[in-house]
Structure formats: structure tokens, C-alpha cells
Length: 160
Image (cartoon, rainbow, N blue to C red; front, side, top):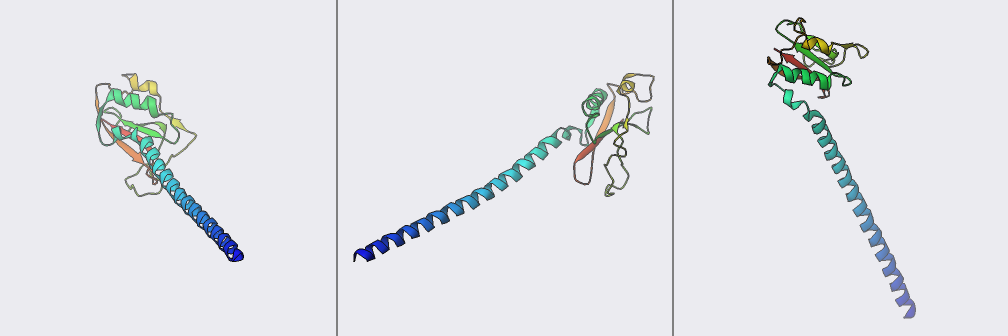
């Protein structure tokens, strides 16, 4: 009888140990899934915040002074270009990187930088009235965003 009691105690101990290990494994797996979900949500939030700086330029009408502020703010940004088309300069002028833009938005090159080593445009020309690149601070410009195939904002276009 003493042996049977000892065997039952050992069996109960083994059963409880296995149950405890199973519970720990289940908790670990569910915590791992929750961590992955949290990481994905955090990544989405980061992407939204990084792109939020450009939402003000998405199909809006802005003043010339806002155009020059955007030039100062974004022209040195890596892999980024800004096109400004004025009344005097209908062809436009790139600032920062020249981007590949065509009428076909589905083109694989659309929004990509033409030449990474070639920065264009002189900001000082936007304030010289004699220049074709002059941006009238009180002028009105239509702003639009250029996105690449990965849906990343690569540039801005301001058209007077």
C-alpha cells in the first residue's frame, strides 16, 4: 500500500510538471504572437507618421511662401526631389534630386531618382525676381505628391 501511495504521488508530480510546462509553452507562444502583432502595428504607425509630413501637399493649393519653406525643408532629403513650375518657367525646375516622372504612373521607374550624385536647383534663385525660377511669396501653387512603386513619397510638384 505504501508503494502504491508513493507511485501515485510520483505520477501526480509528473502529471503536474507536464501540465505546468504545457501552460508555460502555450503562454510563450501566445505572447510571441502578440509581440509580432504589436511590432506590425508599430511599423504601420511609423510609416504613417513618416508620410504625414507630406499630406499637407496632397492635392492642395498653397502659397509661394509655403513652396519656398518646403524647398528649404525637403530639398536636401535623400532620394527626394521637388519640381517647381512657375508662370515664367512652365517647364519647371528640380530642387534636390531629379525624379523620373512620366505620364505612366505604373512604370517601374516612376518616382525613382535619375542621378543620385547630381543635386539640382539653387534656392537663392527662388527669391530673385529677375530669375525664371522666382517664386512669388503671395502666388498660388497647386501641390501634388510623387510616390514610387513602394508607395513611398519621393517628391513634390508645385505648379503655379
